[in-house]
Image (tube, rainbow, N blue to C red):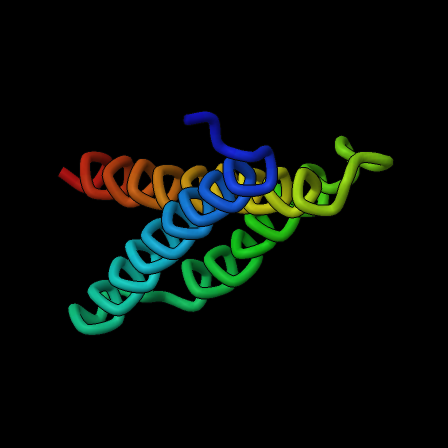
Length: 105
């Protein structure tokens, strides 16, 4: 039994929303851990707040690419862009932290 395009888009959007929430949750956990260990400096805080623009930029890019398409497709593309931005945010933060730790050895 074939599913409707609207149902497939809703399922895809739910997946992208889940990935966005998991990535941002990991980022929040990383920030909380650094704060708890008292390693969170003013520079890291400023960079972390500025980096939060990545998921927003991804969502805007996803919507811009799909301009003119039906709304469900644009919504799925926006969430896909937000998930990509959030994943880049989390992985980039972990890489920067790892690099700083290795550099201080």
